[in-house]
Image (cartoon, rainbow, N blue to C red; front, top):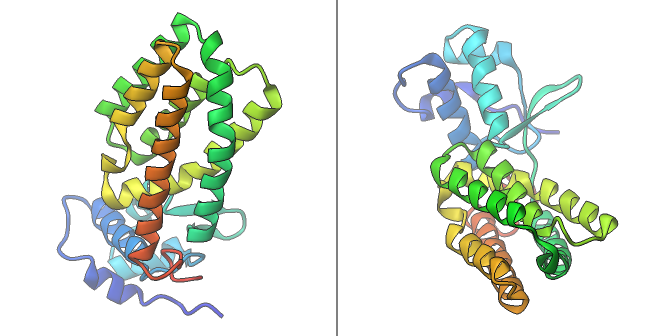
Length: 236
């Protein structure tokens, strides 16, 4: 049976008040989720949170929506907001799937990429440079990769790849919420785009594999910092 979190302790650990009630609630809950004090799978009920924080339900509701955008919680039918459950094992599995699928997509797609595809990829990189929102950055990252894979000419391979990228998105957003945009390797993205533009398939796939290896190691270190293989909420 999952223990009920001590909401009063979470509020106290959240530090001083922020400019708005929403910011105060969001910051305290965000810190508690990332540190593991709120375990994965914990339900977050608006009425209980409003009482613990001494605010109305409106700022609590908005704070929960912001945390959902960061992949720190999910809204589950008949349960409401629930802290996201992710694990080191699942992340490693997703990276293995991506490593198997994405280089194959890229090498098949590059010979058929059109100028408009390359221009769209460049625009997505520019937007990522200017964006700080984890939810939006996750979407832009997924779209960038899919644009470069879009001309592979194998619909089932592309569908599997898109599904893997969508599943990975919550890990990227979770990590961006914890450590900021430094996790998103824009230089590797640019190198990959430049190689694709030059039609250099070996270089492009080499950069992509390095990109995935780096990201996998970063995520593994993220989990290791919270206990061997444990998910950030404390479950193994």
